[in-house]
Length: 88
Image (cartoon, rainbow, N blue to C red):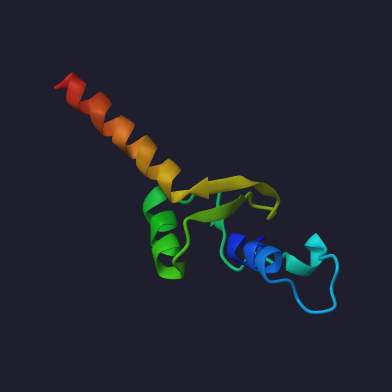
């Protein structure tokens, strides 16, 4: 996972003596992930606890599938509520 904050820090205030920064030096292993099959309530709880807006998503073999965003979850939920209210 590459943190935007880490990336910007290295662009704005590069470390002394370093002319180039490599991606491998900035990337950190993901400490929190969402597993396929988790319900969205669990995913939001992890995001809130870790104060993050996104989580990588992995399958049962821990293969990376993509990522889920808090904004994406809320947008989908909002659309679902609108659709249900139209049915009433």
